[in-house]
Image: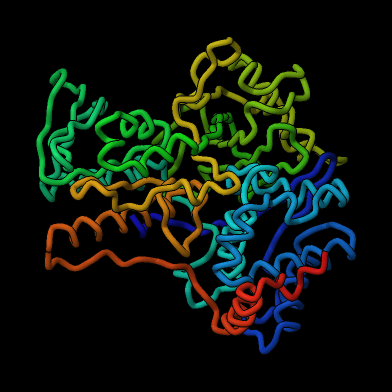
Length: 465
């Protein structure tokens, strides 16, 4: 599966009526002798990447530097309880500052700056920053996607491998509950292709999303065995789902990801088929379709659109398609020849997880876990108080790693679950490798100094407000 990753070299931040590109600033070192050298590297990146006034660039560089050099204790005990919006003092800054750097978290990380913790957003951006500067912790270029549709490049090869190892799948199936005997899980109850079943086993890994896990673990027997599982009820989800436009010809001028900074629905897109290993029309399209243009809508519930004045969830599928296309056109069609025209669209497909849009019954069957202020302390570890039950999903704690909803966090939680199970079973099998995130040696000295200040009850040395 790893060999099916391909590099995306280009990212565009598109604005209403114009656009500008993002790239790694040349000549910036990835080693820093002192705090001022680190500051200049961060500021240099911002000056190239972000079009905001110089005084706001300098302020933003200070805030980023403050987070990068904050000790772990300050991150988890101070920044975890402050929103990213407040951390950046966004309310006092320009609209461009707010949209380009405060609100970007909703586009990049499916987070809302007004409720997401500074620790969560800051840690994610820190990982992106170090990866973009090609620190030794990186295993390749930052921005990579699959070289084919996800099922072809990832899910199907994975399933074939697991079956070859003796894994038995029951699809489609839904887990309806866990039976507890004593302090252990005795069986799982499912509705599957054979109807209702009770499956007994020695070990159980609950690897389902948050909204599926919450009702399963909230039964009296489960909570009696592990009262800490009650905290899952306090965790929240958000909507983030997409629409696929199938075009009758290839799309020019869109060589990578595009973030539509001023779009009401917080859009980001990628013209996918140009990165795929085989011709789209011959292998995946209807024949009339030449391009797969994928768009994620990050704000479904809060902000009215341009055409119909309604949030996405209150629009019909046709209205969602028209509204999304219109918002993208305002960003990409400038003074020259338009990039997006209505006659490009051969068809579209709304994410199947969006059910009954435009009706009072509208719902999302696959919401994202939403990190909110203080939510870290309500999140479980992979090991539970029930000796043979383990948790693996993106809401599970994976210390010192990025932890917003993503496959990276879900995979890391799974590795923690595997190791906990092997430990509990007394197995001699090798353990899964854990990834703590890269920690540059140059920054560790600053973190040690901040730890001394934090323990003394003093603010970070750069926290001047």
